[in-house]
Length: 172
Ligand code: SF4
Image 1: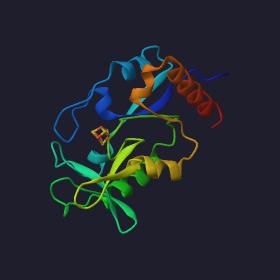
Image 2: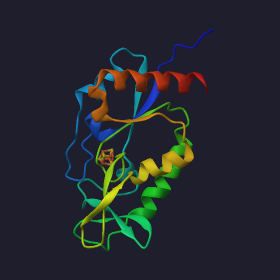
Image 3: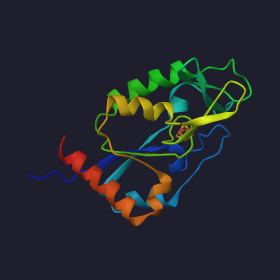
Image 4: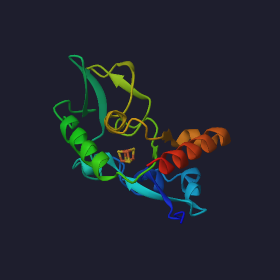
C-alpha cells in the first residue's frame, strides 16, 4: 500500500518564525509556511548556530578566508571562531536527519545561505561562498534538494523544488 505520510522538509528555523537569529528575532516567511498548508509536506526546523551552542542573542559571525580555508569568525571579535562547532553539529545533524527529503534555507546567512559574502581578516568582501552548514550537507548528502526562501517567490522554481523533493523521497 502506498504511504501517505507527509514528506519531511528541513527548514531554517528562523523562517518558520522561531526567534533564533543572532539579534533574538525571527525571519518568519509566509511563502515558506505555505509549503506546508496542504499537509503533503511537514517542516523539520533546524538552526545550525543554535545547535553549535551559540546562544540567542549572540555575537554575529561572518565567513572569513584564513590561509586558504573558510572560517566562521566574529564580526567584531575575530577571536571568536565557531568553525569547529558549526561543522561538527552539521555533520551530526546530516546523519541524524536521514528522513528529510529537502531543505529550505535562509539566504545570506553565514551558516544557511547558498551565496554568502566571504571576507578577509579586516572585513573586506573578497568573494562569495556557501554557508558552513550548506557546505557540509553538500558533501554528506549531495543529492538533497536545497532552495533558498527567496526562490520560492518564483512559481516555477517553487514547483521545481517540490518536484525534486518528491522524487528524492520516492527514491529512498
Ligand atoms: S543559523 Fe540559519 S536557522 Fe539559525 S538563525 Fe541563522 S539563518 Fe536562521
